[in-house]
Image (tube, rainbow, N blue to C red; front, side, top):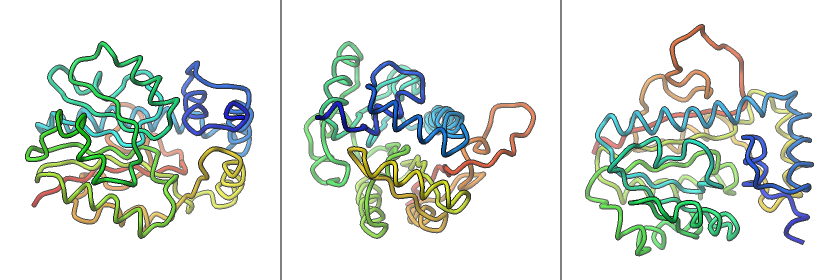
Length: 254
């Protein structure tokens, strides 16, 4: 039955060109491609590129610890690969298949752990021996919520969850966040949410103002909360195409 239910991690893997997906995943993922007019394919790749730039930005600021919450299936340019030698990384996902696959792929990686847990339980995650044994919360940590919070219900509850991780971390910690917004393409987003009703986790896009509220207690780095193609892009002609996703990086100053 599990293979007949579209899985959000495997759908994302399919869009990224991975190999860990099944017919049900591809069918729903292809429907989202049709609804978005193909934008989702470029959007997820831009989102992945944003993750890399954000990790490098945090590393350049001296952050050597990364907590990737709702990490999904390991793919190309994972956080520990981008962050460079000496970085300590914990991936967290509550999907048993994702966790098993992640542990297998990362078995030979040093200073890297994969924890099967629910990001909605910050106290349990931060107390987990694979987290507390590898990450020192007295030093800055990059907290990553990349394309995951739109799968967490309740905006106020989601803000509380983000704040719990923020409060546990030292000044200088970074929040790396990407989230689907409902403002830019409301009709298409509503249709996409209907497709996700049949997946293992439903989708809930939020307004820009709601997404911005998750950065409470963080100072947003330039250029603020923007599309994935507009956050510190590589040199080249300006890319003004609009996407449903918004991304940003904040720093905890005190």
